[in-house]
Length: 76
Image (cartoon, rainbow, N blue to C red; front, side):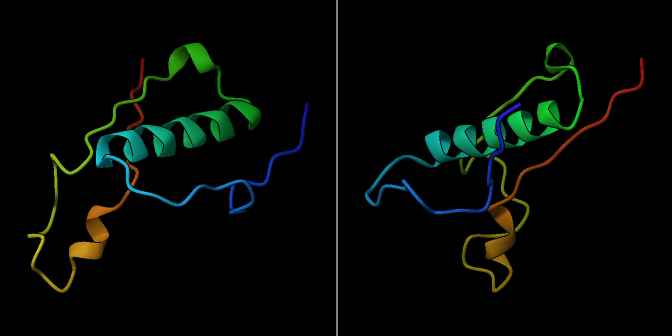
């Protein structure tokens, strides 16, 4: 199993991109991390909402919390 630093900015690219693409990249990174921790990848599904499901108004002082990853655990 290869070691992976999920918090490094090495290799990151600067530029303009869509919030949806960034959301998808975040979700995939979390999925990969969970898989490396032993969670069966076939039991995971990722969804990227971009800016479509904010929890705070974008003009709010707490709008930074809209940039997040949510994990939902479903009991079978």
